[in-house]
Length: 173
Image (cartoon, rainbow, N blue to C red; front, side):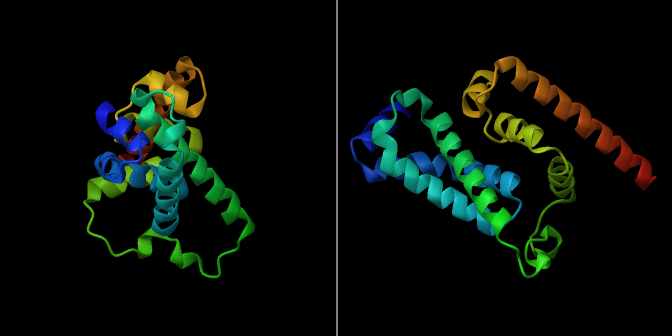
């Protein structure tokens, strides 16, 4: 991966595309979790990739490419969230996930719904830890928080998810 990053820094578009291709699904999931709808998520990923390609020469250490790109994506998600606060949608059903016609397993929908109910700070650590398989240190760098805070947020997120699952099971039986 380091060799590809070096080639991309030298201006090799194909190397950058190979790097991005390995991460595109993870990036999309992160944006979808943060933004809540497909259109904004795709916009965020596209803009983040554009910014990353335009600024890859500024990447100091090639080993941090993944965390650097995720940080760009998260910043872009924040930008879109701020813009969306200023814009009032005409039809809420456009953004409602229940109106999407996708084939998803019941389990993935349940987990996505449960994590969707978490506060933003817990969604971020869950996503970075499990969708991106990042270490605590890398998550701390991306979110600009201490490692201990990452661990406590992840622990709290697990507890909240466990409580939600127990409540859901009680309601189903």
